[in-house]
Image 1 (cartoon, rainbow, N blue to C red):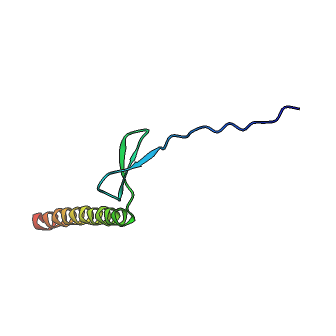
Image 2 (tube, rainbow, N blue to C red; image 1 turned 90 degrees about the vertical axis):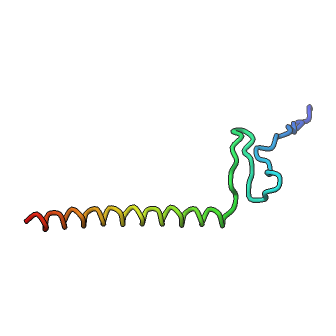
Image 3 (cartoon, rainbow, N blue to C red; image 1 turned 120 degrees about the vertical axis):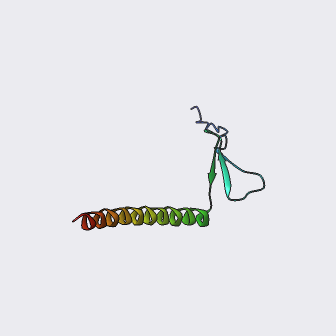
Length: 74
C-alpha cells in the first residue's frame, strides 16, 4: 500500500519590513508601502474629519453671504 507523502512548498513572504521605520511595511506583490501604525491611522482620520468640518464651515459662510446679499438688495 503506497503511503501518502505530503508536499511542503516554500511560501514566499508577501510583506517586508521597511528599514529604519518600524511602522512601515512593503507589499512585495504590488511594491506598495503601507503604514501599519494605529496611531498614524487615528491621526489621519482626525485630519480628514477636521477637513470636512472646515468645508462645512465654508459652505455655511457662503450661504450666510448669499442671504445677506438678498437682505441688502431689498
